[in-house]
Amino acid sequence: MSYTIRLVRPDETDKVVAFGLRAWKQVFDGWREIFGDALYETLYPDWKKVQGEVIIKACQEPETFNTWVADVDGEPVGFIAAKLDEEKKEGEVYLLAVDPDHRNQGIGLALNKTALAWFRESGMITAQVGTGGDPAHAAARTCYENAGYVGLPLVRYYQKL
Image (cartoon, rainbow, N blue to C red):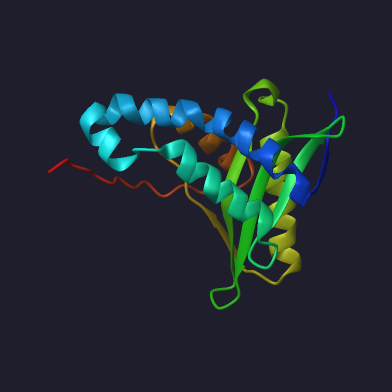
């Protein structure tokens, strides 16, 4: 399978949202298992709506984000949204998702390399991305490590009051 990396087109937003939500479903299902129903429902009462809005923002705000898609036969199957912090001279990977039907084909790594090249070309001196330490994020961590990122162990605790 071959793919090309290109900037997202505004008319593709619905497709990107659809596969993005499919990609993140396992993450949110995993968090439900970790948190239990009561805490999960408090933290993420409508994750699909919120996550969908975040993806829309990334696809439709080119003044804030550069968002690329991996294109297979004219259809987006992966995306990365990145932004620059000129003051810190830091590039940030804001979102990354690959359609579950197209994983393990190097798409996430290729998208990361595209964002990293843009950061370098833009004069950034560091790049950062955040992801989960839970089992559902294992593939994401591997992808980021393969792209050259170094992880910082971090634990965030939650409690329903």
